[in-house]
Image 1: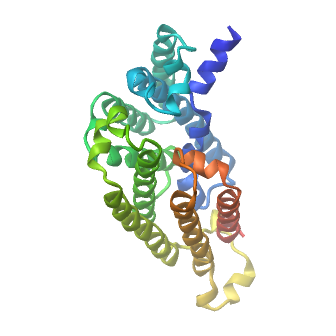
Image 2 (image 1 turned 180 degrees about the vertical axis):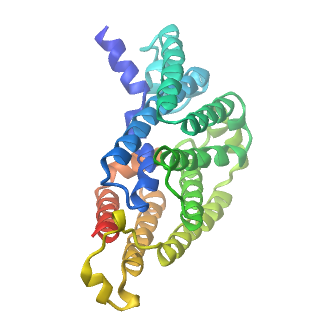
Length: 308
């Protein structure tokens, strides 16, 4: 029984939960991160998306059983390897789906709608849309956008247009990067694992990566240029009133732009500069100390800039 529980936990892909941290984007840039009621709602939204996304991952593993067995990494997953029985996996999908929607309804009706649309989109992706080139990348990217929207709706926060464009570019950058990693890892057997990979020659993926890497840091830079100062509950430091307009907090957020550019360049270096074949993007991130340090430093600098 312990082996089954372990297999369920592995199938839930806890490493993928890092994507759900995008739930906190709305509350962070709205200046509400340290307001207890708002933070609790964002935390509940994060937990809900961890449950919902894990349910979808298990559903996808059930459908991809035969193709995953041809993959050098995915064939070790509990369902593909036979460690997690099919009936138990299906039972978890049903229970997890309805439990996540019930929890979403407790947060807000509109949050529930976003979770429902997110689920339907990914179920359609698992059943058919992943076979269609370009559409499959759009679906992967849309998952990030839905997370950000869900987090903003949960706390009733506003999302800047430039921030939304940056998130869209970044999510497409990661989605194309995922396809590039798969092209490296599955060289020679890509079509057997997923037919849509036939329509992604490496030179085309390289063009896509360049396009979205550029738009990611550029839209983020434009967002920092226009981001308003976050003043919690109408309070501000008296020294701020005496500073020149060129030195207000709105300008200080631009200090984070070089970190974003460096992070993009580091990720590209890992994809193209590594001598070994690279796995999924989240594995690339979690295995690179430099990239983790850059993201941590960016997060600290954003919080300090907005709130202090």
